[in-house]
Length: 256
Image 1 (cartoon, rainbow, N blue to C red):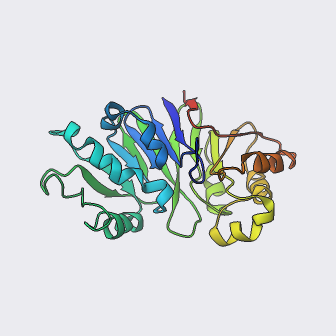
Image 2 (cartoon, helix red, strand yellow; image 1 turned 60 degrees about the horizontal axis):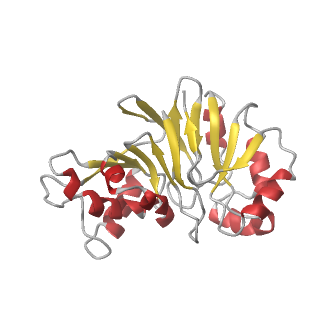
Image 3 (cartoon, rainbow, N blue to C red; image 1 turned 90 degrees about the vertical axis):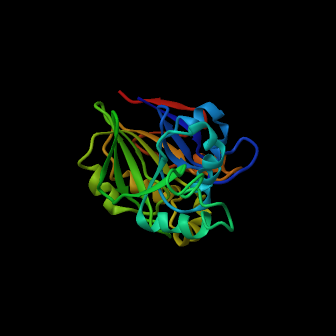
């Protein structure tokens, strides 16, 4: 198994793409602007999309994906969009409402749509062939989750957008974690904004990682465009007892 990083930025600019990860060929984890770097043939292979929460930088690839591949998937099962019930309701009400975007849960026909919305719950383990993915708790301004891709030699964990999150660490203490993708969206001098928006800054990251077992590969995601050097410098100054590096679009992570 492998994870391909399609996007890992907190917003857009030249060379910056928002959150999206491709698990092998058929499972997409979040659907930010990074999805647009896939070819049409690659897009048509996606059978499942897991959405961490309803914010635009994580969902905007979903309606565009549906439009791009509808003709190439004639006769195939709908693409399954997996998310919390609250997130799916937001998609129905605010995206697939025939005002912002056509309702691809009923196109090209109600009987054979291109998309099907499938709810999950925190703690549920989803199975897609050989892939097993656990839904993890997150703490954000809207209902949100993270994900753990379970593998024999340790899980790949994505926190999603989250502030301080005791429930996550309680679960990870019981799990063999090989890779932790964790957000740090703001600088330390933006602490008040980070708290209000339920994101992390480097000092808060230090407190979160104090609860992490040693030996985990820590990858920082969701840094805003133009802020990478500053945020990573502030993280380096913390003297953390973990291997920490910034996640990079195009990076591939092998899971054994």
